[in-house]
Image 1 (spheres, each protein chain N blue to C red):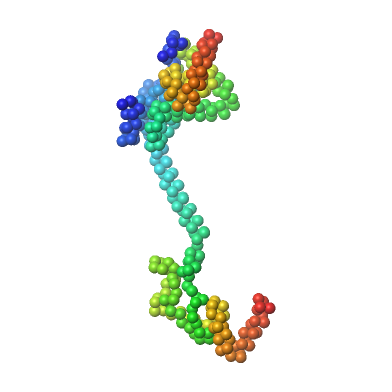
Image 2 (cartoon, rainbow over the protein chains, first blue to last red):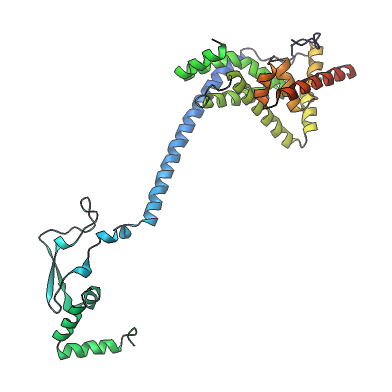
Length: 159
Length: 178
């Protein structure tokens, strides 16, 4: 092919130990297989780490308490109650989440939630029916009104 | 069907069996290509192992768009140059690396010092830059055509022709000087 270096030819002074290429072939195959196994293990570890990171991130950003969609939350404000009386709310009015599997709030269909409105001003706030407030005030006795007024005197938000 | 095509088909059906055939076909030429670049047998052995492990791991990605030999020599070239670059970092400069390679050639195991002409020729080749040595070795020893060398080295054919001619003249000049 090349005539410029005819005297030298293609010979090089380099040689190898006897049986070098046979040994090398075995060594290369062993190392290659080991490397493949190592890479597979690394892949599994990486996937496992990724999965745990995803679960961890899920727990941080979507904790159990906040995973109820607003539309699926129990509509306490819509519970129709008669003020000053002990009212009962049927569980059929309460939506549980998730609806079927492993609900956060399991209530037996026969059970009733007793809810005494007389001692609960919070319920009155949650009620979206303004007329019930007036009815409730009308039904209050003088003593009740007096005690409520005294509570209002100490209320830092009202004063 | 060419040798490369046979190996490629074999790899597709039986990866390990195909790799064994590939080793049989390319182990020696690749070793000597690396050896001419790094000189010391033990270094060539390490680089060659690295090259073939990379080839084995990359067999799934090889689509056969280029010739198998081109792909193999490209990996061998990259690994050899990487090894020399590492050495260059250790011994500070490229000139020192070339001096070190020449010293290794003068006193190393598995070198036939009785073949004085061949030793001298290698010494002259070692004075070239790494890239020039790659081009010269692929053309002169591995007898690749310029198209193939172009694919291995990512260099234009015209540039390769000029470079090879320049290298030959340089070698002749060095040979006279010695």
